[in-house]
Length: 416
Ligand code: PMT
Image (cartoon, rainbow, N blue to C red; front, side):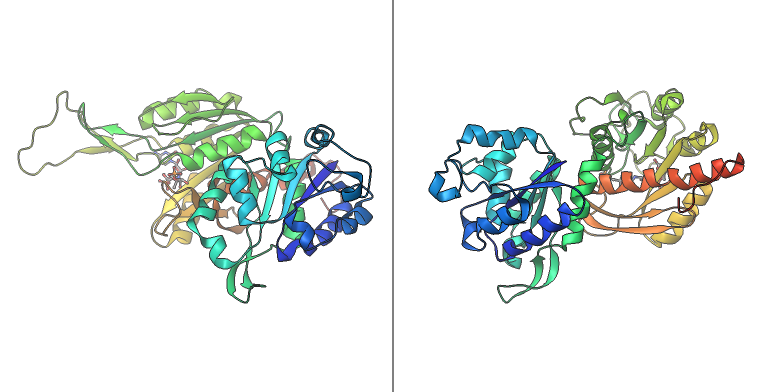
């Protein structure tokens, strides 16, 4: 497989050479594109020697500049069609901004627009530049367009300051590259049923009981699954979001409508992901006309059906069932209790009392809870998190298969 490494002008540019070597160890054919600024830090010859390929340093190269034969931008465009992934290291604030806006004024930014291959960026810069709202907004924009962000680490920076901005470890970048390369088709043949948004229970024709779910987490799960080759059924409560292309969308409002939509499609699903925030109660009686203000009002509520528990009860063999839990206090204990009570294979635990994550945020931080594991996932864009969650969800299949083979008296491969 061919991977293109885009090198930008930052002090960490020399680390791109280490990345090239690390990628080659995974039998990847690595090509390098350098911006003008990158060439102030490292010579193209370094990368040409490491890769055995001519390094693309500009749109319009002459034999003198590139050290090879003259090449046109049209020839270079071949790089956009043939690469299997583009990884940008170090991604400067400038290149992130160009990618986000769509400026194509050099070869790397043109390649970004022209390629349909997955893109990974590993930013590195001064802490203030990294934390600047403009840079953060650009990163968010790229994440929503499926660019995989390998977030910088905190520590002592070349500029003399301390904070976030140091290029991620090479291993983390390699892992991201391998994961996008291998992930592209790992859900082919699966039907993933995702629920999203917050259900609403009407009090009268104009009011409802609802919750703060925006649907962003569920839509991110749906899009990630779809991108990895799954057929996706998205059962969604009302949201302001545009559904990911090519998903089968079923719009519902109440918990009962969501319940029916899910149960009637359960037979088709191989993975069920219940990211929706579902109303646990509904008014026993719904007023036919708008309720008039007349002193204190007491609502008589009755419980709704627990869709997740019903899904677990009706699951067919091999189906994975994943719940979410939104907690405000003693999150881990409540998450564990929910995992046991609902009988799901895993619960994705959100501590929604935390600032900047959970409801309606573009970012989230969760704990992936199973019977025997608890995996912390640090704060990151929901779309990026969705891929990490799918990795863990798919990993649940392995021990299950081994156990099934052992039960059937089949030989179990050592080390599986
Ligand atoms: O939509 P966002 O703004 O992006 O926010 C994301 C989120 C915080 C809503 C989401 O990530 C999340 O945590 N969703 C689950 C919230 C929730 O309702 O948790 P719960 O603890 O009430 O329910 C636990 C599980 O049971 C959930 O999978 C829920 O879908 C399911 N459930 C709950 C009640 C019910 N009657 N039927 C259910 O199936």
